[in-house]
Length: 86
Image (cartoon, rainbow, N blue to C red; front, side, top):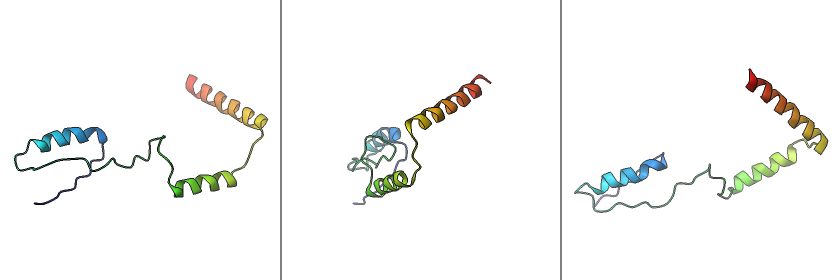
């Protein structure tokens, strides 16, 4: 018996692939060994490397007062509205 490992990039294609392979007479079994690590999923925990990078980025970033942040946000919003209306 041979074991074949297949990586499918698009998760929505997995079920279709499994259904097609199951219909092949020479295939003994088909199963999913685990979910692909979904780095885009916002509910997944950050890796240690990602957490360290976030901490370093936060420590090295410049801080703003609430007033500066509000002015900056309003300035960006005005730019966005102006660009949107063009």
